[in-house]
Image (cartoon, rainbow over all chains, first blue to last red):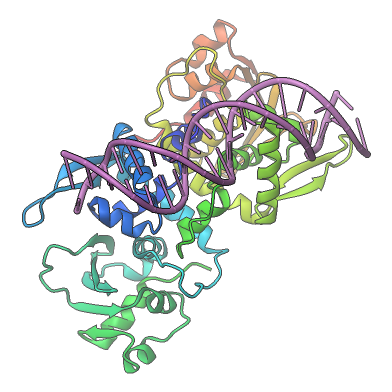
Length: 217
Length: 217
DNA sequence: CTGGATCCCTCACGATACTG
DNA sequence: CAGTATCGTGAGGGATCCAG
């Protein structure tokens, strides 16, 4: 990142910490759970490895992320957010929704960020619709599973890498198709009958899922 | 601005628009009202004029700001946020509070951003404390007035350039001193008796002012 | 005097090759 | 797999210059 702003201002300092190129996208990808270097590299489509390396060191120095040994079966190192880093979720969700408003349709061949979709899920979640509800969903996008849990109306999303113990409903599709369903461009029933959305569990629950996540007017 | 990220993701697109260096600080300064080129240059302490010029054009192209002729007595051009640009207030406030948590005390000689202080005011405003309250305050920092209005518990802050028609309370001090009062490092009564805070109106109202703005725990 | 545009230099970033 | 090393490019920093 270029020189610091040097102003005494919370926003200026925040930008000193996470204002560098790629930094906020790294945080975005870590919001769904710990990741390896190469997972980050893949999710950031095009980031040079030296820049990724430099950013990870910066973020670690600032106490936003932590370098740690990966648990059990997987070996090696991984990166995860600290508590302080996780507090970026709220500003990031708001900023993501702001940006989404002027984002055109996906261009063919344009990489769709899975973690960006998860961020959109956090942003479009309707607590009023979910009030009192308890469910868990496994969302599988391009073969990568994400566990979405609603516990008495409260939402939590994590990568479901640890051999999930079977959610009530499993939804498998592509990121593009999923996005279409999220914003209402495609209908759930159609997607199921045409095979673009595979549902394990009741279709009613699948429909309910998409009612939980709707952009505000 | 650096190259675009090219990912289909709301956050990535937001960063394509306002992720360039200085961009978010420009938006921060415009949140308090329209400003001239040189006002922005002054508030951004150290920005090269060519960069400011380029950023303003970018932001205008993206529909975040608007170039306009300045109203009456002042002549020339000014820049102001569009409705879309003003929607950045919420993410910016959140991000500013996040950054403020790890910001040390002001270094001597370090420029203190007036508009950053105003952003902090928006972030630390306590609607619960202000419930039902209607008051207007004129805050004068380094001679530059800011009008802070609470209307039935709702907050609005603008630059009070247009010969303010006298608020109930006027507070005049330096940015540093004001910040100390905001975070509770200094006491209102002490500041008044030592002449570092000048109050026009009742001291009780001055004390109430600082109760309206308190950082969350 | 405001509101910029132009020039030059430096360094952060991008791309890729290479190593523990 | 997880980075480091190397090198070219262009955005940003800084000062000066020009137009209305």
